[in-house]
Length: 126
Image (cartoon, rainbow, N blue to C red; front, side):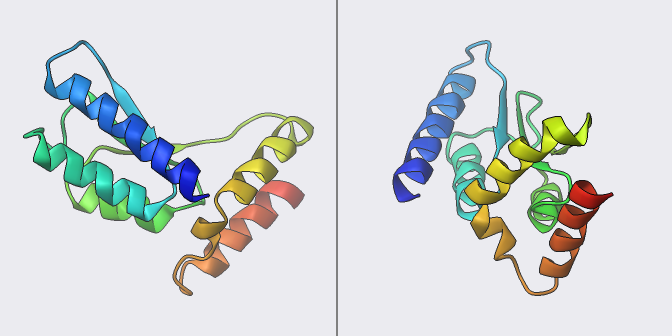
């Protein structure tokens, strides 16, 4: 997991560098990892980019990392939610992989954990 996080953070840094240089780039930073999101916000600040720069936004899956999305919005960042739609048979394998990859998001503060599990149950069972 550490190597994946490091690779993600390096890719975000490269994207932010391109935006800061004025290259025609747009970055949608999709992560449920609060530490990576914080590093990205620090990266915006360090490069002199506005937190609400139209070329940079953050996104999390609806029902996962909602506290992170709220914190990013409160910090002045463009925060988005990925809304899943489609047949359960198509979505379940994808969602299961995201849950496995984002186990740290499921270890969120105790107040958020019941909400996360309720959303997972709603999506899988209906």
